[in-house]
Image 1 (cartoon, rainbow, N blue to C red):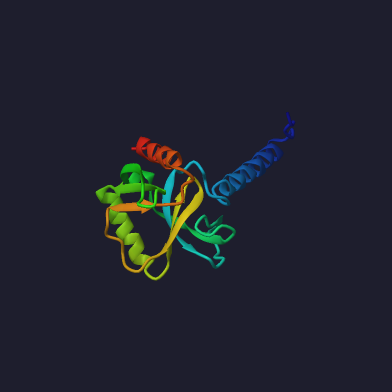
Image 2 (tube, rainbow, N blue to C red):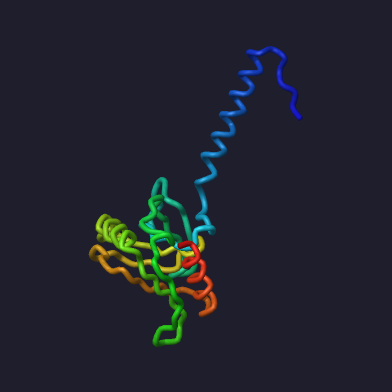
Length: 163
């Protein structure tokens, strides 16, 4: 335990400095690496370093780096249903069906990203990236990039349990 200064003025100054330090540390807590506690989110992305954007590895192209927008377009709370399936080649895919509000957010967000990239982030890892040609007005999306069907099923379960 650190003893506080004896005079009331010094004590107040010491407490003010300590409070400022705690606020500065709290402000840093939300920056840096992507949170793995978020199961799923879609964000704008670029390969060019951009102030305020988060650096991440691109799972679509191992060894390459992307920068993710601080603004999330949609997340797991915008998903009505998530299921794991296998595509025609036998690869595991995650099928996401968005809520009406989630579909509206996706449409509005991709309207702003036209001509730019959109990244799918699953458990803090960029799994897919695509160029946005037109606003996405669909309510269903398929994601690839899973190690196994069991991995896709686990993520589907996690997304479904957030609803």
